[in-house]
Each structure stands twice: as C-alpha cells, then as structure tokens.
Image (cartoon, rainbow, N blue to C red; front, side):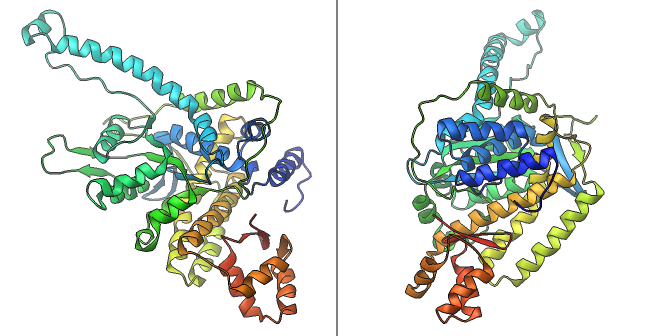
Length: 456
C-alpha cells in the first residue's frame, strides 16, 4: 500500500487498493474518485465484472466525453488531448463484453436520442429539397438548405472514409466501439494495405487530417480530430495478428491493454446489484456529456486549457527523467518503443483523472494537481506491465527448464533480493538471475515498485 497516509481519504484509498488486490486485480482502482470505484467494485461483487475491464472501459468512455472540450497545455506548441486506444484482452468467456457495454451505455442512449432527432430533421430536409428553388423561396426556406448532420459519440464497423466523415461532423470527438477488435484490425488489409493503419496512427496523435484522394469529390480536412478506439480481443487472435514484422511499425505500441491477472470464470451470486449503481454511473456520465465544446470567433475549436500546478509539474519532470533513464538502458528496440508512448499517455491520464475528480466533487479543474500525477504514474505502471505481457506473448517467450525450476521455487510474491537468494541456492549468478527477471516479467511475473508477483 506504500507509505501510510493517516487521513480519512488516505485510509479509504489504502482500503480500496487492498480490496482490488484481494479481488485478484492489479489495476490501481483507487486512481478513481470514490463514486466511480464504488460502482466498479459493486459490479465485480454482484455481476462478476472483472475490475480491469470495467475500469478501463469507464476510463475510455469518460475520455470520449471529454473529447476536444479540454486539453492539457504542457509547453508552447505542446497541447495534449486525452485520446485512448484500448483493448480488453481475455480468453473466451472471460466476461469482456458486458463491462464494456455497461460503461458505454449512457453514450448508446445519447446516440439513440440524437438519431431520432436527426431522422426528423432529415425528413424535413428531404421535404424541402423536393421543392423547386422557386417554391423554397416562396415558402420561406433557404434556396440551398444545409443538410443535417448526425451528432454522435460512437461508430462501429466503419471504413476509413466514413470514419473521417464522422469525425469531421462531430468536432467534439468520437469513439470507434468494436465488440471484437479483430474486425477493425482486419480492415487494415481489406482495402489499401497499410493506408488504414497509418490513418489511425495519425488520429492517435490528434494532428490535422487531410483526405485528398483521387475520385473523391468530397475531400475532408479536419483541423483537430479526436477519436478513441476500444474493443475486446482474444490473446490468440492478437498474437496471430501482430506476430513477426506486423508489430514493428509502432501501431501496437499505441494500444493500452486491460488484462486481469486471473481469468477464471467466476461463480454467479444469488444477490442482485442495486440499480443505484447504474443510476450513479449514468449521472456521472451525464455530467461529462453536458460539457460544451467552445469555438472562437472564427469558428475554430477553443478547448478549455489546463496546466500543471508547480508541484505536479515538478513530479512529472522527475518521473520523465527516471523513465528516460530506464528507456536508455533498455536494449530491446521493441520495448523502447513501448516505453516511449507512455511519455504521451501520462499527460492524457492526468487530464482524465483531474476531470473525473472535478465531476465527482473531489477536486477542481483549475489545474492538474499533484494527486492526479501520482495516480497517473500508477496507471502507467499497470499499462506498462500489460504491454510487456502482450509483447512477450507475441515474441513467444518460453522459459528454459532451469528457468522453469527457479520460477516454481520462487514464492508467489518476492523482492529482487529475496528471489536472488533462491537463485544463488541453485548456483545461479547474479547476472543470470537478472536476465531471468527481465525475460519473465510481463508473461510469468508482474513487477511494480521493486516487488515481483507471479502471474496466475
């Protein structure tokens, strides 16, 4: 639990963190405000929703609502949006889809309401367009009325061109929601090989997008695109999709992975969950949905800018220096690429956490505070471990018989020095032991704050 914090909130945070560990989850659930983590824990308790899947789905849903309404200003010319690409990874029957759908339910309802409004407006538009130009003027309509646009948060199973059109029509931002991410990835080779993959790499950065293809009379230019991606995928499919050179272009490194440590099927409970938890989640999401996107006098998006308070900024800089040292010592180019993306994600996490605290009345949105930075660092640690786990799966990490023997002799939880004692008793050298730790971490071991834990 780290250092003791003898305050009411500190005691609660430590207790919630311990509950997460008891529920076989390494996800740092206490990064969320009390209201949100209480919902997550109750959904685990009564609906058997794995904490990792629920928490990561909710975080992505919140990020989708934030969209272009708020940014984090770090330096001149360096503004950060909270764009997230998230994959819920699990074996068949691991209960991935239900937490995902539940987290996004408020956005589904919003989109359904907006679709009904759009249908009515489009019927009126078609009725007007059926008139001659003279009749339109005589009846008080514009000669060339503007075709209505469908406001939405979510899209699914969509082509690159349709995705670009949806983003241009929804400047606040959208989320590509795929229950099975395999369909999204398969689109990369269905049409122009590599083109769609590069399209989503560009969207991840939130940079200006220009579509200027031949035979396309409706070329699109999006000044400030915002697009999240989320869905589920099985480990075997993920490995098969990205094995070999397919994982070397940096695309996979942009994806965050939610992977529960234990994926055994949980027993149903006879007791039902109280509907108040669903209502609470809807209330929280409605607060995010109601946030307005601002524009300047020229019609350009003008998001609310948050900056780090002095102590928070100092901590971010300190973290980055330590992170850079770790990256510079890393020999694997693949792992270096993974680590480098978290220098982007830590800012995105900070923005999400700060606005979560504001909506849940546990903070303001005047700036990013130190508490949000510390929590974001813990999120980075979690997603670093899951990314390394995926990396090891794709690389096909296999232990030698001696390494397997050592793994079996190690306790479920141990420090480096405790494990070294076991290795030395087997006549291992310190350097050989350290290479084992590096190889096993991500697939066979989890590592956080100097402690190791066996993967189940």
